[in-house]
Length: 133
Image (cartoon, rainbow, N blue to C red):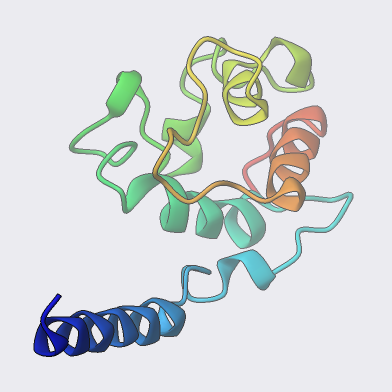
C-alpha cells in the first residue's frame, strides 16, 4: 500500500477512537442516580428514567405510543392493568418486557439498556402498588 494511504487510514482511526472515547453514553447521568429499594416515587425516581430511556427515543412518547404505550406520565403508564398490575409485578407486561421474559423485550437492541437498579426499582414500584407519588 501507498505510504500516504496508510497515514490517512491511521489518522482516521485515531480520530475515530478519540471521538468514540469522548462519548458519554450515560444519558446525562441517569444511570448514576440510584433508585432506593423501597418507597419508590414515580415522579422522582421512575419518570426521569422513562423520559431518558423510553420516551426520548420516539417510542413510548405521546405521539408514537409504540405498542400502544406512552410512558410520559403516571396516568399513561398505568392506563392498562395488563401493562402495570398494581401490587402484581409478576402479572405486569411492563416487568416482563424490561426483565426480558416477555414477548416484547425492552428496550430493543441498539437502545440504552436499563440498569439492574432501574429494573428492580420499577418492579418494586409496581409491587408497592404503582402509586402516583
